[in-house]
Length: 99
Ligand SMILES: [Zn+2]
Image (cartoon, rainbow, N blue to C red; front, side, top):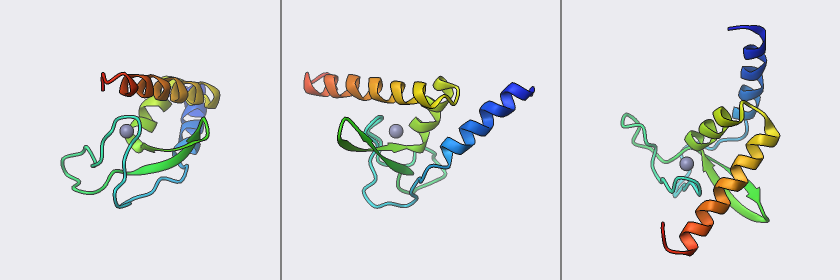
């Protein structure tokens, strides 16, 4: 791992440390629509954090968060852009009955 990777990982860790909530009853991810921890060894609620997008209160699970973090390489601006693009797409598909 070179120095650049270390920096990215540091940024990622900072962003991962946003307040994720464990064992929240009725936890739901607005991005993947999961309700349960997808890991088969964990029979527990989804690990989520709240976020605000377009004045809507949403939740995102730790899995989706990690996925977008990878895609954005830890860049907060790109991360936010991926987040809002993804949500807008999901919202559109739900509205038109595709999802
Ligand atoms: Zn999710």
